[in-house]
Length: 378
Image 1: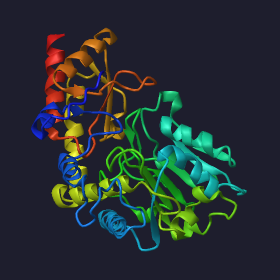
Image 2: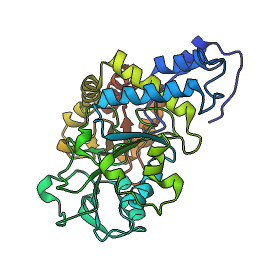
Image 3: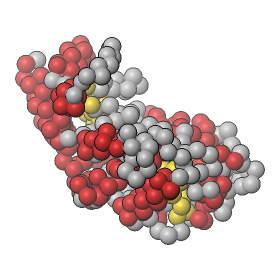
């Protein structure tokens, strides 16, 4: 793909060029948010400078940071004894930060529930800091489901219990958090963050990279209880310490100012235009349901769903064609209809349709209709 930069392109021409982008991340952003960014990019109202230029110590960013946190606390009903951190490094850095802060030097193991590729990667990093106990592993069945609580092999005590709420690659999702007993529950919520309500009080720590539902790549949101912060040791490198990051209000170094600004706009959009997280959850179920309905119509004779029905993701729908020789034609035909980035991860194959919060229902409907037409013609 060759990109050409035409400075004379009008806003309307740019809108006409937009496709339905089903990428798993960085993902589609809400159009009203993009338009507000465009309007404010030359000069943030009241700041006299672009948001790309303002200091992270400026009154303008103070206001952005304050409202971003306040909006998030309102959307998720975050208790007062939890801190909100705006960090960098993506979920991949959190794979290390969690055990560095919570497992290093502990006699207890950390228990990991492995429901897909990202959970497995997190466990690899945790083993560098201490003992890891695998409470459940779905690898034998190629990660087609999540476990019931009764299937979890949890030791009498754990430093923490870790799970991934939604696995983007395999397309499986927890409908509710797993039982962790008395241990702090840690959640990688990267790919279903802000797609529905979450019981934050039931977690010791919850984190998410922003580039699925909450903003551009480069921002990571961490929600951590004061109780968990008290466990963080003093021998942790400063930038990797949750405690120090909390003490410095996410400004131990220069934060991702632009990322936090976009996150603020998205929280406003979720609150004011979507109607909150209950409404977001209803939208997610309806959009993913359009595709799952096609997958289920012929019992797997043409389209084959990867995930078990009870565990299907409402963010990432994974499937393949019974006839693998048609996959290239399916992708090419979709692209002609401006339906892009639907190929599945190489470890699963087939297709992955990521319908995050900002994906318009019109895009999912167009893909649904294309799937029906493709099946009828083949």
